[in-house]
Image (cartoon, rainbow, N blue to C red; front, side):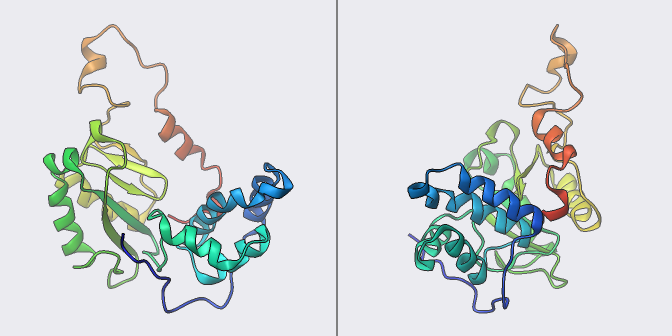
Length: 221
């Protein structure tokens, strides 16, 4: 087990945005009065989506909302690796899957690109503060490997060229997630051209959700 600590540099305060506060209250209300601490993970994740990472003031604010001791919220945030306890890139934090299927299809080359383009060490900010990266274990998209995750979005079927292009677009804009080979889902390449099956929608569910941007005004990559 790796010991994880919160960053030494902390903001002076944390407050949920108006929209996110309303969302958080609805999450808490889903649970009985004596079970509302169960909302700790969704609240932590929404705080991270808003700020990019989970700070000490965010932990304390969530503890106050859920009537928990701050140390209990910290225990949750430090246990799950999906929570970042230090600042990440302003534009994006890239999580590169390094598990066997992705490794066999080139994830090690993606890691080398991260070291050259972003920082030599994981979880360090790039020189301009816009990007950061880390290698993670399986993120469950083996059929579309190699894969990276940025926030809630997956970028799949990556090559060295398409990954470099993705890094540029993450800085300059908001690239559409999904397969870089334009696969609809996890079907074999060319499947819909050679079969009788037809695609009923132009984009799969994950891309559709991304394009709808349900909380775009309060979301940080």
